[in-house]
Length: 447
Image (cartoon, rainbow, N blue to C red; front, side, top):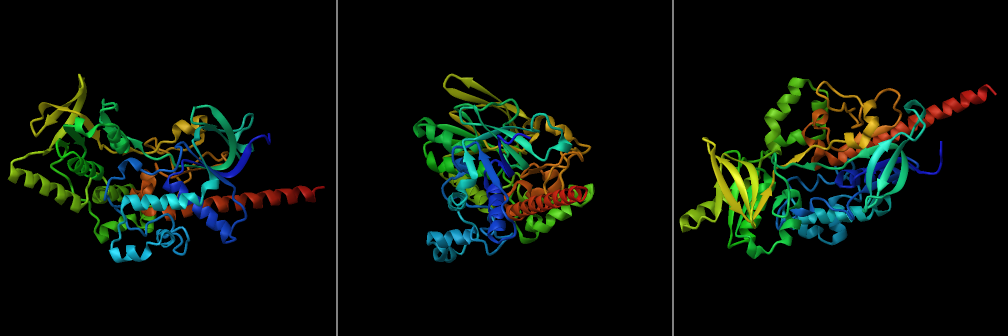
């Protein structure tokens, strides 16, 4: 095999919190002397580290405990914990005095940046992996490596590397309402602050927010605060916002042990997980935010100024551009009354689709096994199940909700999940080295 390309034990695609957590887990393996040199490199298409930057709204808080950080559930003594960050920042006493399990998103993002800075030598920014394939002229059973093409910010192929294992963590894909495209006046919540800051606030006299989840509610509150001169219209398909169930028993669905219950459960068991516990995370809003928005609506009723308008049981069916305005087509109420609303900006907080690695895998996808529904089969260690001749490991951080349950793309189980992937990579390498040594010994015995 050609030696002209860099070769790593692991190449990570994407460097958000999930692969950052994995990089830390492997670093701690080395620091503890448990493993001698798993070579790693991560590629990230963004120019610098960032996690949901466009939703770092003022005073918004995390929806999980600070203890569900990058490391604590895997290694409570880690120097990469949120507590370690607070200590390094000189704010540990103040945070404790605040008596709150839920830091602001801004502070948690600062924690992630602090951890990322200590991993800087292991990640290449402005670099996007565009294909994964076998090295030229090889067949799966004779190759223990995959070849990855990497483009720079200008889209030029600037680097080719080889890897014995690949971990894909490219994140969720923003979902827009059917038939609606993004432009300078129609935004997805994932780009909210960036697009909002390009506007002159004085030009925003009427804005609309579509969606019934936490992001939609937080954006609504933000616009109501930031644009005191404007009408804020809320388009909700349900009858108002639904409260998120974050009670102790319900939160057990995010415990590490719940992954086994889901993975090894029957189809009936898995269906029950989603049916009973979907309201812990999907299309739900924190109680405090719901009550705050309701108080605003009620106060406006009292004062006779209806600046915050809630359209319940309403769906968006289309968008037209009318001169400088954006005309939103709606179906309103139980009779699906057709209505049009002219707005200066439309924000679609309509969620995300799961990560789908097929386009990256290309021809390799034929070696990846699928279930009856056409989804990738995933091993318990988050590795795609492949044909026996595939010797390399392809792991997913995300896109495994159908096999591993509700926490697959969430921060709740990030530390344990990354630790399990690290354990798998280390054990597979040890097994490979052992097999190689046995083969070499057998060959020596015949000489």
